[in-house]
Length: 217
Image 1 (cartoon, rainbow, N blue to C red):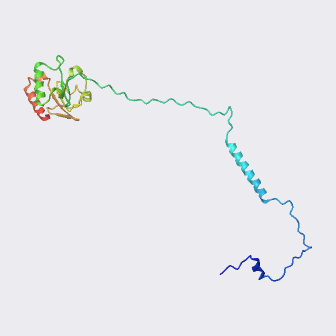
Image 2: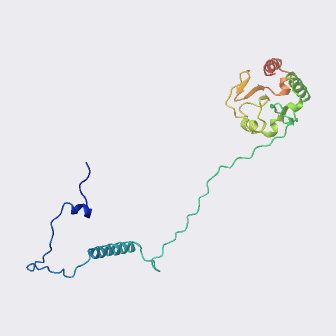
């Protein structure tokens, strides 16, 4: 259904055909408005007061900076240097050979560089029995480095095999026990035997040594 409400003047004339007259009523007095105030004036005043209040509140939060209200500057505490453990210098050793195969041979003779003539000859047979040449091993006379423990020797030579002639387990500070068997300590095979000079005349010890050497070839 179409909307029957209309404001069209021509359409309204079709419904309202009677004449309308405007007559002034003298008995009714219409008083004029006194000092009419715009509605927006009160709003302006209210808004102005709120703005001023906000501004004053914000200003009140900012302290005034003067000569007696200067921020204090505190000196920075000195940095405490961290304590770093000092690494002990690595020992150096005077030895014979090239140590290419990481085989360390220890002898213990205070009177000779290596051993007596008999001892040196026995040592030549020993290295030959395990197919070693002079460039393959490191030969160290422990008598010139007394007090050196196994850890220091291992740090320097890094031996895979160590043959000890006349150097006791206690001197190397090893918590081990020799029972005429090859000792596997960490990654190193260790064989202990008497001093080369005495070993040359000890047939039982020499036979035991030959058996160990066959196992490490």
